[in-house]
Image 1 (cartoon, rainbow over the protein chains, first blue to last red):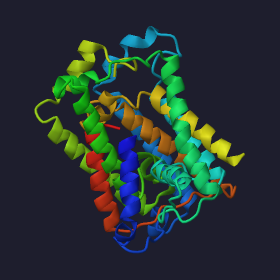
Image 2 (cartoon, helix red, strand yellow):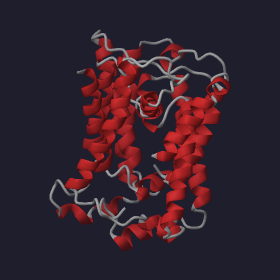
Image 3 (cartoon, rainbow over the protein chains, first blue to last red):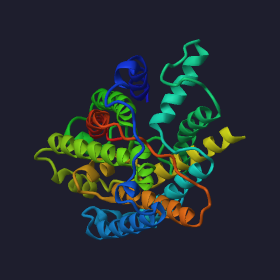
Image 4 (cartoon, one colour):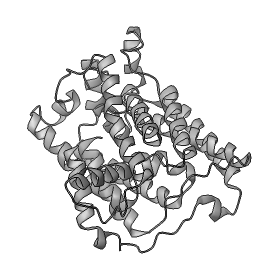
Length: 254
Length: 92
């Protein structure tokens, strides 16, 4: 959290330099490249990705570990990806219908701008505080009570502080885990603002618009994340399955 | 009023992210190592549903047009690499 805000502030301080990278943004989508109707292409795209989800779910190597905990009451267990994914998709659409855009990197920036305005500092990267920036700031603020409520209902508020897979692979020291989240948070906050979006803004909200910028950003950060994860877990890939099996990982302990 | 809708959408989104297990360390790292694909399926389904709804509303001329993120070349690559490394390190 703090890390993300520091990332946001670094972006704000470096705004004039950073915004010059790559020059003026140009609005270009896949539909424009192929010169066909956006509507048809979006539907083809949607069907393709739903098909891909079902295919991936069939070959998912971790699926067998999820069967065990079905007996918990509905408010305590984890929900499936079809239902939760579909709700996320509807929320993205509803946000657009309201004239806004569901994204959290922009949201953190707006929230940062609001918080700092209380101390008399105004962001140069957020020229004016209006209805739209307020909406994004509130969106970001909403995440916390929402996730808290889910965690409260699942009775997972007092779970282990360092997640078991991290303990097994690296260290059980809270300070080390905290440090990785902090540094990772700074890089994510800053990187998302420079690159034009986070996992939600550039990927989940950006790809359905068929924006070329979001494709490039989403593709780049997933590649970078996969390479980094493979370097971090080099020689320890089996741990993911082993720890899941041994500890019976679920919402409560992961 | 509108700000409240933002708060509500954010809260539902936060609830769903936690409840879908997409915030779990083993799910994020698992997705990046291709050992646990649930987070991947969640994101693909979300963006597919949004794409279908956009597509349908476009064909029906409902006037709901998504904002397009601009393309600005190298910025995406630099930001993407930073964000990607951060994503794997923090697993958020």
